[in-house]
Amino acid sequence: MMQKNFKGTQNRWVYDTATLRDPAINELYELWRYRDLLQLLVVNRIKTRYKRSVLGVVWTLLNPLLNTLVLTIAFSQIFRFNVPNYAIYILSGLLFWNFFAQSTNDAMDTLVWGSSLLKRIYIPRTIFAVAVVGNGLINYLLALIPLAVIMLILRHPFTLNLLALPAAILIFAMFALGFSLLVSTVAVFFVDFVYIFNVLLSVWFYLTPIIYPITILPERFLPFFRLNPLVHLLQIFRMLIYEGASPSGMLWGAAFALATVTLLAGWIIFTRKVDEFAYRI
View 1 (cartoon, rainbow, N blue to C red):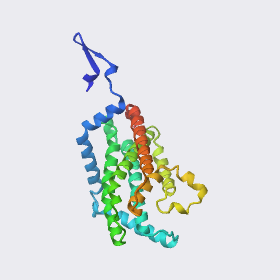
View 2: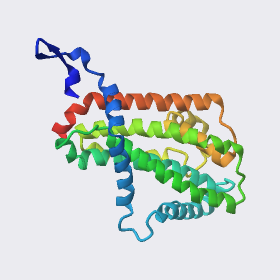
View 3: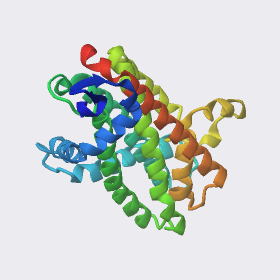
View 4: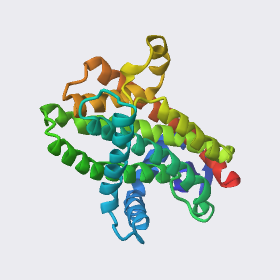
């Protein structure tokens, strides 16, 4: 690789910065070169997570079901939210939230606490965040199975709009990866941010209409809630899964633009600062 940054002149090698790639582009190229390692990291995370678990991967299916059961009893009976098929409503939101929260948290933890490998050998630094989001995608797809089971039990209709779900998942994965890169960059320079972010996630959870319908909020608060990017992304999932409706082109466009800007910002900022990571981790 280093030879690409040098020119031969009269049997001597001269360093030429003009031949250097942009860090963001170079990181993408290196990530492709290390795609086999990326695949290995994703598989290894899955094996490690369920290595000592009796239920293994089955826990990925049971966990959202148990959480849904508890929250459905708590909020539909005790707080009496008037939401038809509340179990489907809340599970579609929980799966969405779990993917986001676990991806961002794991990306930070992997880079800050488990990246001693960076000081020993060269690997693309973004590989950790991409592997975490890839693992989150697999867990999310598995968790859709109990959601489908509940929809069958409650006789909730499966509409053709569900065919657009892969596009919604891809957009959300782009947003999660970009945001994971952003918070990981901050966490490398300010380690305390890892703990602060956990608190912020708890607040963010309740500021996102996951366990409650947004219609219960006073009208004067709605403009502030709509500043939450997860509200718009979650709306697409709810429309496809719960309402069986097709999101408008404007909503799709806004979600894609949000995910693209977040991914580009996260990728560029991360790759600009990546050379400093080894000195701060």
